[in-house]
Length: 335
Image 1 (tube, rainbow, N blue to C red):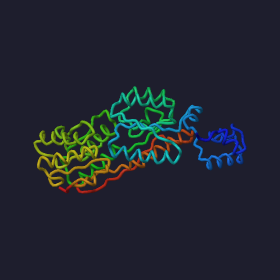
Image 2: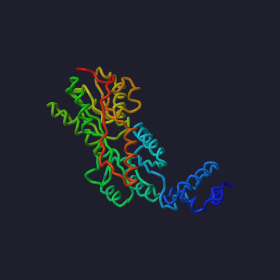
Image 3: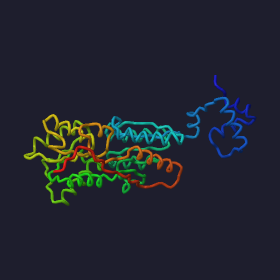
Image 4: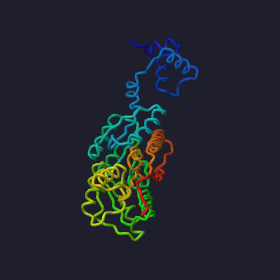
């Protein structure tokens, strides 16, 4: 049987209430008493019942993290940044996976409130009226990642500039002589990836007086299979194959490369391919993928620090826009 608070108090020559105040990190304890109690705790290896302590204070030392998917390097990197920062600050994390289901996102927001987490890091793919209503009622510090909600919600957000990133990488293709550029993206319910990256693509073509050919535009899901299917559809629908493809994510780009190879085309000799994200496998495929690097590890860490400031009622950044950069590899040819 483990040592009790009563025994800790006896060994430290203080009252049980003093031990409780030290364990609960109360300010109303003298430095001398706190030092004595902490020394006994260290010497005896006493581990407080953290669950009972948390329930008594009506709060936990847990942060909820709502992910749309768990099987991508994007989110694993972000979670690593979150985990490192939260661990350093004495917090645990509770991960939930919504599988890109918006109803599950709503349910998990409500569930985490019931679990009395101290705060929530919410990787949003879509922000509906129901999301807004739920978040406005939640009464818990929340930081939103991946979607710019600064105009519709009073919660901080951490984003990358998806419009500018798309402009930059499509502009890179134009600078390499490409005039016929196709697009493989995701459905436009996702504002950041679905809408802003497509708008960046269209803006560059318009600025350079290049045709936006609907037969060479494909939108579906986030998987490599969607990238493969999109490339296949563009091949089948195009009278003249585009010299380059802008894929809205690296996974879509990798699927497109696989399709081109299966159909007897070479990348970049026949078709150049670029993506956004710089996933772990992007430098490992053949050819290595030219893409836009998003530092998801740092985004997770920055979002975590903003949430900690929010919890501690310190000043927070309302909208943090992370930096990005083009990573040149082997998937683009000069034409």
